[in-house]
Length: 583
Image (cartoon, rainbow, N blue to C red; front, side):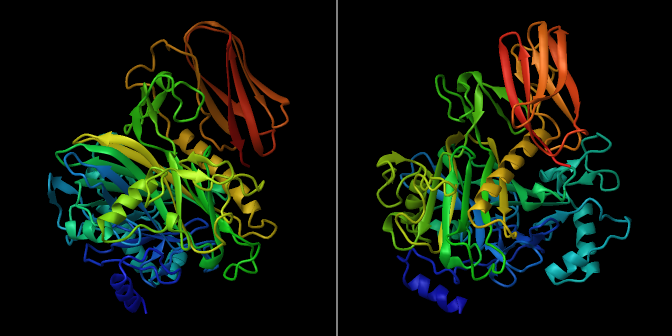
C-alpha cells in the first residue's frame, strides 16, 4: 500500500497534502547498524534514527511515539529538525534536515566536502544506560526486550558495545570521572549525568541526492550532532525528554539568514481530529484533540503533545531590544554559549515563528518535496510567512500581521485558535528560531524538550494543554538548573560587576536546593521564600554582606510540594525567581 502511495505522490508531485495514514516518503539507504533505536525508559517510548527522523516506527512503518508507553497508543507520527539558509551568490534558498524525507546521511564531515563512509560499521546510532556496562551487574531488561522485539541478551550486548565504542572523540557527552579529558570505558560514564538513557549520533548533508530529494536544493556542508536523553523520576520529567542539536558549519562559506525549525506531524491518536497551537511566551508549539474523546485513545481522554525551545541559537544583542522577552535590554543581557559559559552582549534567540500545515487551505499547504519551490515555501514558513505568497500571517482575531500562527489560548478560548479557519483534521506543526549567521567552523547549539501530558482519567483534552504548559515550565527550570554556567572561565573569585540572582539548583528539588547570588557592592541583603499566596515561609539571608559571590542552601523538608518564589533584595536591587518542590 505504501509503495503504491509513494508512486502516486511522485506522479502528482504538486500535491501538498499528505494523507494521515500514508505519509512515509523515505528514500532508504544503507548505514552502520543499528541505524535506529528506542528511547523508552520513562512514560514514553519512541524512535530515533541516525539520519535525523524521529518519532516514526521504522520497523512497523507507522506512528512511533507511544504514550503511555504500555498502552500502544500513539501521539506523534513523525518529527525532525530542519533548517533554511541563504548561501552567497545563490539566489535559491536551501533547506535541509528531515521531515517525511531526510536530507541527511550518517557520519561526520572529515574535511570540507568530504564525508565519512555512511556504510562504515561505526557510523550508527549509539545508546547507553548508566547501569548496563561491560562487567556490570545483572539488570532487568525485559521491558526493552518486549518493546523492541529482541532478547534481553541482544539488548545488553548492544548497550555494552555502545559503552565501549562511545564516540566521545566525535562529541558524544560523557562524565570524565578521572578528569583527564580522555574517554576511558573502564572508568568514565558515557551519556548525560543522571539520565536513564542517552542516545547520540552524528549526521551530515553532503549527499546531494538526498538534499535534492528532500526539497530540491543542494547541500550546504553542515555536520549535525544529536544528543537525546530522558529521566525517570516518578514525576513530571517522566513525560518528556530533551534533544540537543549541535550544528557545525564545515563548509568554506558563510550561512546567512539561517533559521532552524522543529517540525512534527503530531497524530494525537486518530489523525483526523487534531488541532494545533502555540504559546509565544513559553516558546512552545503543541497539538491537542479537537474533542474530549478520541477513537484511538478511548477510554482514556486524549493527551496534548508539544515541542518547547529550551535554548535557542546565540546571536549578538542589539541595543534597545528585548528579543528574548525577559525584560532586559538585550545589550545588557547575556546568552549561553556552546561551552556553557555566559556571554555578555549576546542572547539566545527565542521561538521567532510558529507555523502549521493542513489540507483545505492553500495558505497552509505542505511545502512540495523534491522541488526548490518547496524549499522557498518552507523558508517562508520559518519566517512566519505564508509559504506561497511570502507575506506575514494575518491573525483573524485582530486582523494584524504576526509571525505566530494559532497563538491563541485554547484553555480560555481567546485569540487565534485552530478551528476558526478549518475544521479539525490532520495537522503538521513547526516552530522556528532565527535569523542568524554561521561563518565557516562556527557552531550553534539548540535544545528542545518534547513533552506530552494527559491521557489520564480526570484530565480532559483541554486540561491536558494546561498540564503540558506546566511540564514545559518544569523542563525549562530543570535544564537551567542542571546545566549550570559560569560567567567566564576564570572569574569566579573576582568581584562581580552587577547584582544577579541565579536559578536554584537543582530545580525541581527534594528537599534541598542551592541558591547563588552576586553582589557588586556591600550592604544589607535579604533572601526570603514565599508560597503561591505570597506568604513568607522562610528567611534564608538577613544580614550585611561584603561584595562577592555567595551561595545559600534551602531545606524545604517541612514544606509541601508545590511552586515557591525566592526574592533577593540588596539595596534598591530586587529580583524574584520561581522554584518547584517535588516530594
